[in-house]
Length: 506
Picture 1: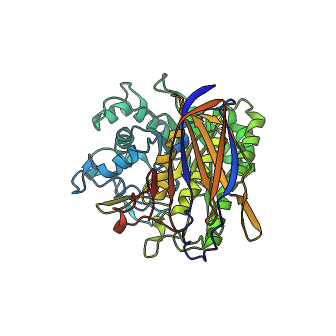
Picture 2: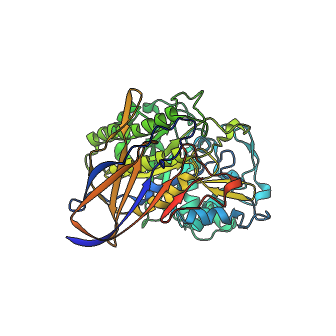
Picture 3: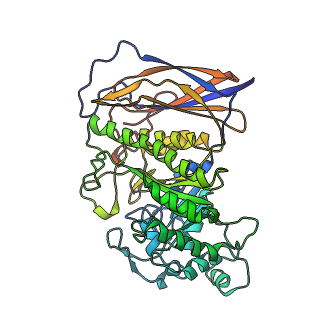
């Protein structure tokens, strides 16, 4: 039995007036819940790449959000915003996916290299029909990941690209040979090859990436694999990720695993949380009652069953779990903020999103035996972002603070938490009121994170720790007084006004 410190993080709604909902009488005392943290039966290691990020050429995600250009009055390093990089570095971002998303399958990498003033302007057909000047390309992206200290995950163009184009991009990125493609990189200012650990072969090939059948894409993947299977850096072989399913499309996974499973390292999965389940009217990011609060959390928890079902299919042909499941797009998706361009997918971010993020991260950690990476959509100014910007202004969202608090789980050994959660009941439906996840870091500290999904009932949790003797306890709480609490540019100085040991959102 070991004597280690315990640190905990809790995400919940404070027992204060609810937004746009009548507040019931507060309970006489918080309900008591018992939990046992089993440090004596450790599980698999939580891959730190579960805390990955995603940046697409979409709206203000890249331009203004990350890239302002070297001549901008906004402080920058080689055109990349200093304030955004500093905030993101505090999250210990392990991996960043780029350039899409749907944009990836219309992106031709040679448009984004060489002198910026000579790069061709193209149309971003998917996201607003705006002109893409290609000022942020391969060199700028690799500069960004190096500034962040993150791994690069590049999505290659299968939908409108060619095998030769993808093969040459891999060579341009990773080859140290005296070849015309590698020398082109040198002419553009980068002598040494970059390390690019992850490469995606297409994105959403069942939809915006080509509207393909799984059988057709599986054959295409096999072809592309043939020409990018040779690593230019034998010490760091390329981890190739095949395009996986949309949500519960189990047939896609069946076909891909049976037809091409032995040729892939990873298989992707996309799942977004919509409060209404209706893509035509998804619901507001900030104007909602308890019905949509509950709907978001209930639909978020469906991620667990979706992963379980896909993992079971993968186990049939890959019982050794050689192929990793990569949830490279996930998060909440609402109607855009009023007055903004619909194709830019700009939405606010509330305490509801923080709780949804924490629930998803708990689910990924629960499936640490199969999930090797997850990338929230998206990093800046798009969907469930970490950061929002308005010209020179920048703020951190509630979701940012979840990633900042829970980053301690990265690379830790998962520890089971036995918990009989009470129900959070709304109407004729119910979900668990409490979610818990625990890991032990390499230095021995045990980290426990807790989520209260109920907007109206507090809980007292008594934790018994098996296999570890507590030496000290420290904790933080992320909370607010309303379901739709969020940070705005007018209140950036108040967003970290906090009680002792907590981060409060106003």
